Length: 67
Image 1: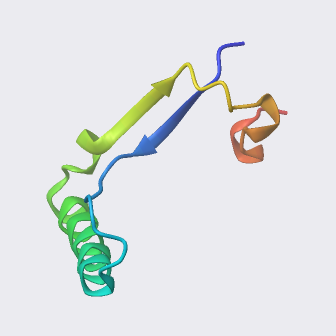
Image 2 (image 1 turned 60 degrees about the vertical axis):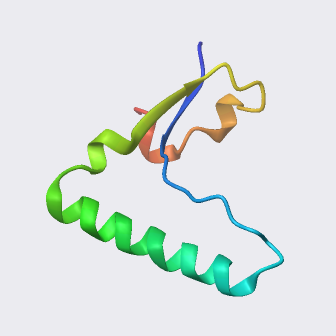
């Protein structure tokens, strides 16, 4: 079994010591996701990550496993 991770990739580099910058970036991410949902561009942000040694079969969400 080859394990991978499907995720949405969006983010901003911030100065973690600058609380205003961190909060502004959080608000921007929410706005970006909202805009992406309404313009159907969110699928372009979906990424597949392979070769992550930290993933385990037990990490697979139950709703994805067939009975």
